[in-house]
Image 1 (tube, rainbow, N blue to C red):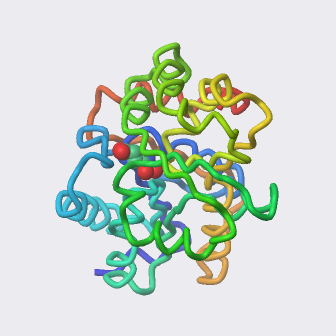
Image 2: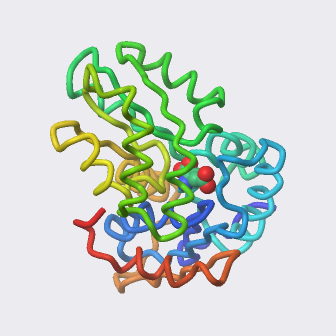
Length: 261
Ligand code: DGL
């Protein structure tokens, strides 16, 4: 079954948990008139520690439910994109389905042959999509850094905490010398831990993530499909989760000032 094709229908934004809320903010900033329906699967997070088969089952079911009432789907999750974006696009060929991949391209603007840390989930880093991305941007030396502990800390509301800092110090110690030229936050949970990441890496190393690019791509796809909401009043934002107990954290991260992330 295809998605609801009405320009007035909401846009679904899906992540394993709270990470996609950073993407949701960018979507709200770039498309303020759209109705947005966020779903975080916190009951099943972290996705990065689940098998491919489990992820496909979960994401297929969420996509089916969300697309019965939404006109487009944003996979605000690098892991879900790596595993399920292609199959969802095959299943819903006329529906805009926007995925995310680690933002390597902007890191190439820093210097022509950068050494780039890519922090992401194990699943993202082991999937074919990431291998293809590294080949596409082969002038960069990519240093993959799986950071499963950071997903758990962010889901626990400890994104910018002493615990995150300790975890990151240990994780990133092997990459301190020579210092990398840039770091890509290839998991949507990680921008919420930018404070701790900066304290460990220092302010001189630029950090990149894919939220703004994803929202921009969504805007282009909706426009091309004639699906932009034609009403100039502000859209609504609805936050939902498979774990009701996680909703207060979703609301906190949604309303927290941007400059803290
Ligand atoms: N936020 C997700 C991503 O961008 C996954 C985090 C997880 O649940 O492991 O990859």
